[in-house]
Length: 335
Image (tube, rainbow, N blue to C red; front, side, top):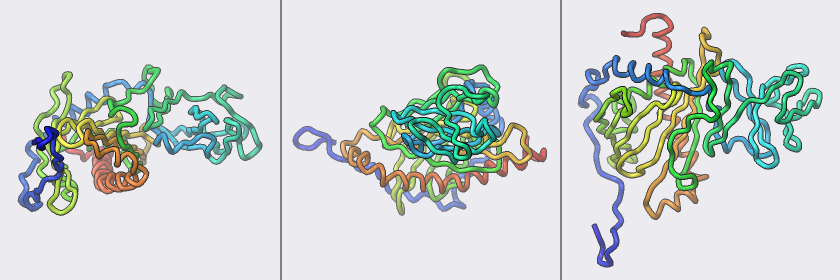
């Protein structure tokens, strides 16, 4: 719709839609075929990761700030930045007497152990070998060849995102008692959305399922609840570019080009009796609306809200993933 000056009038992205009551929704269990989900999961597991694992948000590791520690596949990892912002990573145990380097300090760009003052930089020392690390501007990745067991890649497979600086990003992290495949399987089951998350989604409909070729994606029509009966309808596509990653792209509607990346990072070694997996979810929101510049300016205030929204969903979805693992580990999983 145009105004008298020939420009486009502002149109609200909100629509009024309350949807049916929870008990009156159309069931989705017939469409949510276990074989379709299992097939997509199997193809995701076969895609190369190059032994790269997401460890956290880029902004959590600041220049000359405190080190950042994470355990990946049973391996202690420590990350830090130099004075110029260069990212570095290495084993989390000091090669001298095993002190936890995550509790050390960064001095003049070097990691200085708080037990005896051993300074470690970006070069090997006494068996301590730095790990390859990558900062994509939103997330930080570390390459652990001994954990991944695949042919290494020089860089991780980073999903397509809005142009740097054009969006608002937030990163949420939670930990569950399950394995990465259980997290990925949750995201490759879009049919559960309106049933399991009625507070967040209305009228979710799966419009297309993966075919195992270049179009290996779930296409979804869904309305995101805002408040009361106000919703934002969009079309989205779910893909799995790697064995531990599922990406939702908004392909049509408000925020086209926005992405939600779900990365599952194992904290415990493969085959652990009580596995733990970190869900690191990055939301990168973008919009072509002129007013979105205000959202970018308000990003520090918006990020806690974005993390809170992701946290509410993952409170339920981790229960889904944990239940799936509990059934698999005791041989009771259907199929």
